[in-house]
Amino acid sequence: MWKSEAWDAVRLCFPSENKGSRILLTTRNTEVACDAGTENLSLQMDIMGPDESWNLFKSVAYANGAFSYEFETIGKKIAKKCHGLPLTIAVVAGLLKFKRAIED
Image 1 (cartoon, rainbow, N blue to C red):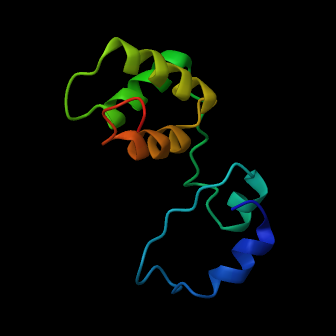
Image 2: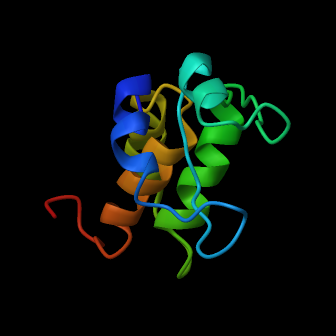
Image 3: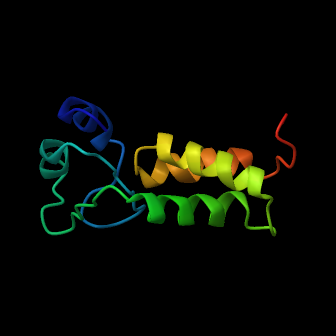
């Protein structure tokens, strides 16, 4: 969520008094996190470095086995373009998981 107003619009849909469903709220906006009442539950995450990014990318995209040097070269370029954002890396790598030809 990018704005507190977005949280205000959806918060009424969730039960109160710690009963019912749980949600995972992700935001880079600390104001949204505070408005959601997560002061004691927040986790500030740093951007991943190039090695960490590549390790996450290959663990998702190539989980089913080995890959060629050509795939490694392209995969590292793609991981770099994700700018260290874990969710972006995981989503993009997941989309490429079943691609086994460069043309794909």
